[in-house]
Length: 381
Ligand SMILES: *Cc1c(COP(=O)(O)O)cnc(C)c1O
Image 1: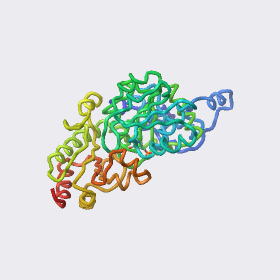
Image 2: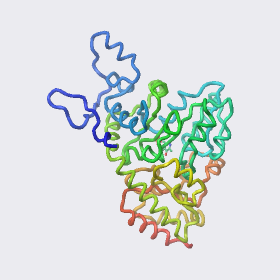
Image 3: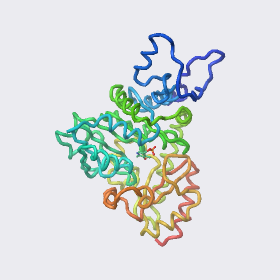
Image 4: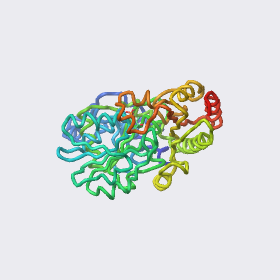
């Protein structure tokens, strides 16, 4: 974690800045020698053309690869760009993609509609059945842990053991490398929305793919063609946010658990989904696979009407989608996050209309709890 605070800054004539400058340029002057052709042919050159990469992206990538214990990282313009680059660079005709029925909603559309429209064979199974559902024809296994919004955990080591020859891709956005490093469990590629905890300030949209140099190079080639650039200023903001990543995550972990315990004891709350609670169905697995449980949780109240009343009554907790920022956010997944999915996908994701999702932020935990207590007092137990 100390290394995050001391990224390498290229020496510069006239004084080397402590912080990497923002390289706000779309292209770079090339040497008038044979070296130019080498730069053009390189994978992810840092100073050629900004769609191919930039010094700011390279700096954030070095930090992100280090956090995941990965050989390489690819920074792109959104979490969905990372998911798309990882999947599109690994699916092969005739090879099956096996994935969960509950995924981040954009991923569900990619797996459930878009890839099948291109003739890719995708099979979606209940999250807990993933390892048992692997077939000899399975080429790619796509997992998400914990999944949104029910916080169901996927056993990464079990999936690796069941699919020794497949490429396993894990969306680690909720856990983050602070709490789980999927490569240590044998996963091949990790994708994350850097929009969330990694940047952590609700002001950047970005995504990252980490893994072996060979697989990340393939993802880079896909991103070079599709073009989801993470621009220099966004990459610079991300590198800035990453410096406080461990401090923020320690707080998210502690406050997440405190809020989950408060809600679990509240008479108006029917259920709390948080992997750190002993009654979470996979608490034991979560404790094995996670160093901490993060700041995400979902809880259900009596019915849809009560959920809407609680949502309208919070003051500190703001009603917005996204997660992992400094502000505590509350959302109603059934009407917002799943707005582009079918009723069946909603039901299969374990979402019901009485459920609210919380991204526990960096405020004083007592203030978050007081706000929720006041909002919950507006509904009958
Ligand atoms: C937000 C999110 C994404 C998509 O990230 P964007 O940066 O919004 O494109 C993918 N997976 C998970 C689990 C997410 O929470």
